Each structure stands twice: as structure tokens, then as C-alpha cells.
Image (cartoon, rainbow, N blue to C red; front, top):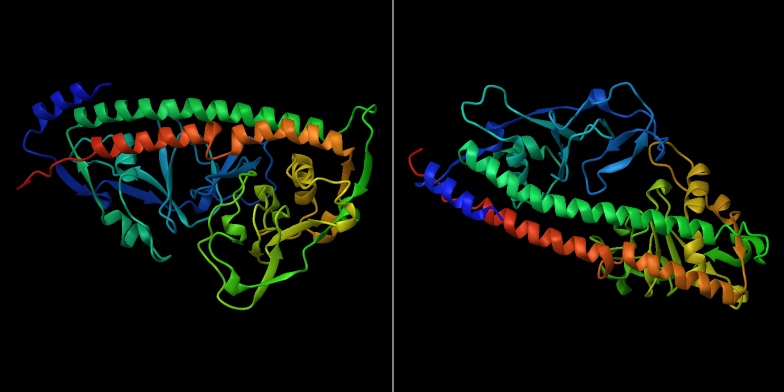
Length: 392
């Protein structure tokens, strides 16, 4: 590690402390209106990513060639979400989903040396949680101060933090490869292209139904209430909810029910329930019919509905453009293969191993990536902690 060299540079160039400046003194922003995507026909085979700047970041890919923001490793930008204050480093061409974002750049003709990548790392250390949804960048976030050490010190810190970033990137690449392997087996095992494997094809509606039972709001909390917002995209299950209804009755779900986000099906939000709870109309609760429980495993059905084939079907039949919703009638007409219970068990055992490796946040690659991020956050904050110089 290069910490000793950094200490030497700090002693040499700034022994009496570091000057701090507001972000609005360092950065300019551009409204992204001319880069906004027009179509929601996203497809992973297209070339241009559509960015949201939120936790999702890459919403999908478009084939719209006009109005693309040209970013490169030599001409990067920071895309900043004005509502959530989340942001990302971008060094590739892109289009934007919403005008509620800003494209950040260094101010021209700064009187002091500034490494743009250093600014990005310094912004990551700002502890700020937005409490409302109005003009965060202009009114609040841009007033935060960051240290502005001499350029030599900035560049050395960037080199150190990029080492941590590279380790994380390598794990992310491995995770992506494992995900592709998982999706391959998921789709291959459930396609039943091999005619020697005996299977009966039925519609989903023949073996399952949408939950019609209700649960009182007073029985719900942030653990057992599931809204579409706390269902995680790309089949990562769910997290705790930030909202719980205070009164009335909502749709109930039972253990082993399958919950599917019904808004923007291309986000692939799905979770197999491990507890009882409640949800709302934006989440579909699929429950196996009593007469079918001896012929159909819930974990097997989960994998059928977590397949790309199902989500492609759901997305194709969705209604609406800006906020498409799955068609409940069409979903119940989706055809699924029912194999023997022994074969279902074999398939589930294979897919469980892959699923745990690529999706389990307590084990496997996601857990290792989380540990790396924690280590990175620690060193980043430590490296960016400076004594502020007086009388500057």
C-alpha cells in the first residue's frame, strides 16, 4: 500500500493543514434534457445504457443513437440524482431516463489544481441523507465542503482508492459471469427441450391463483410488509420496507407464496415468501392451488417464474409506456412445465447452489463484495480526513 508515500507528500506540501472548499465552488452542472431517452423498449442486446443515477443506475439499454452523451475515460462525468443525491462515475456513452438528474463537471479556469476523480471520492465521504425532494444540489448538497489538498496529494489518494476499486470491480466481473452461468442453467433446465424428459405443460392459472386473502395493517411492520419499492430488482429478493400502512386491510401473502413486482416487469422483481405478511396492488401474490400442492413444489414454481422466459413474456404483455404494468390475465395464461416431483427436486437442488452463490447477501460473492466495500469505505474516509488549515 502507498500510505507511507502519501504521508510524505502531506508533510511536504501541506504540513499546516488543508484548505476546504464548497462543491459549488468546484463543480458546474448541466441539465440532461437533450440526452433523455424517448423509448422504454429496453433490451440487453442494445448498445446504449440508460442511466437513472439512483441505486439501479443502469435502467436498461436502448438503440436510440441520437442525443447520446459522449463520455470517455479522458472525458468522464459524474451523473447526480437531484432527488436522492446518489451519484455515479461515468466514463462511457449514455442516455438519461429523467431530467431530475445533473451532469457534473469541473468548473472552467479554477485557480487551484483539482483532480476530478478526487472530487468523486470526496463526495462519497459526505454524510448526507435527503429529507425532502426539492432542489438538493442547488440548495443543500452543493454547499458541503471537501478538502482540497495540493494536486500531488489528490493524485496519490486517487491511486490508492482506485486499487480498492479495482479489487471490487474484479469481484463484480466474476459475479456477473456467475450470474450468466446461473441464468443459463435456469433457462436450460426449465426449457425441457429434451423430449426424453417427461413433462406436462399447463397454464399458470390451472395450478395457481392470485391471493385474495386479506390482512389487517395493524399486523404489519417493516419486515413483513412488502411494497414494490422494497422488492429488489434482478431477482435479489427483498429488503425492509420504509413504509407500512397504518390502517385498513391489504393483500395477504403466506409462506412459500411468490411475490412479483407488477410495475415495470423488466426490473425482474420477485421473492418467494419465507414468512406471512401483506402487500399492495403493485405486487402480485401467486399462490399454488390446494389441489396442485402434491404435484408442484413452490421452490420449483419460483424458478419457473424467475426465469428470463417468464419476465420476457410478462414484459411483452405489459400495458402502459411510462410505467408499464404486467397484465394479470396474461400472466395466468403463461405456460409452465410440470415434471415429476423427483425431477423438480433435482432441478431445485442444482439451481439453489447457483442462486446462493450469486444472490445471497449473507454468503457467496455478494457477501464478499459487501466486505470489500466496507473496507474501501473505511480507507476512503480515513484518507480523506484532513485538518483544516487556518487563515487560508
